[in-house]
Length: 396
Image 1: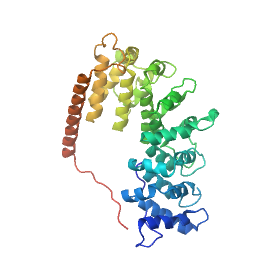
Image 2: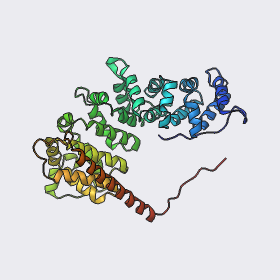
Image 3: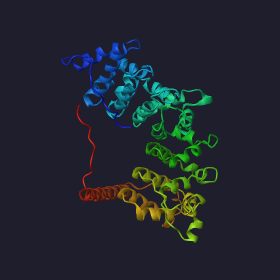
Image 4: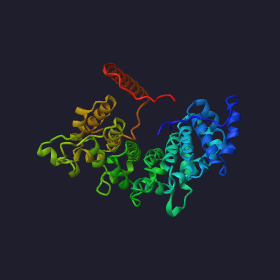
């Protein structure tokens, strides 16, 4: 969730300085304040979060941040308060200030996000997803997750809330998925997710096809991609206990009609797909799916398993169809790995190969040139495309 819409209105006079206005707001945010004044105060806070200087002003106010989190859920201003926190957390430059002002903010937001009765849990999850993009806040959040009861860890509760339909009847909780993706950048989180006894990955896999939210699909795919960095678990991930590959390939598959011989090479779930089968519409998610498969080809056994399940056939058709240059480039690299010769003895694990410094510099230069070429292609496509019609809000 980017920045939530900011309202207008202020309880303070127009001549008051911003610092003075913030001080004046605190009594109106107290639990016993009059409802209409409290609503006006929260609307003013939300309006301040719509600008960089306003966010910088609010980020260091410990009492105000705590007041926003603690507003009663039944009160009318509670949603605007939650949206203000989303906006504050969306600014990476303020994360350090936010945590310095209120070190307990991640833990309190986590409690709200995982409370099945909290009506604004989606906003709390979105604020955490924004906040956890940076390493420092992400580590703070992981500490909050680890502080839960050992029998029911915070990560387990997060996964359960994400994978349980109707966990919160008043909040869809789609933003728990990008939150989990951010946390899965940490080795401790990946160790939890990849624990064979917990069956976490198996619970996440069906969500790669979740039809109602690209936010949820993208967060889950990002989580799975991060897990694929752990090459020691590739055999388990590709084996029958998890069988991850069909779940990564199915969103990339279209309605192609393969020959009988080719069809037999594909997993059962990818055979004889209906003529109206649609590929994943989000280019970023398609790219993450390709990258996850690429990671699974890091070892020789992994490459063989991916080949044996007919991944090349799906990727070949994807490459022919793919309209986005960066996704097409990622697809080309994966195809080259699958159809190319095997590396020399001792270099079978592509994630552990030591690249000489001069070769690494040459590869970086090639990557830069490739990226520049992709950007030029995209610019040419934009020049040829008609200007989209954009609905704009009418000033009031």
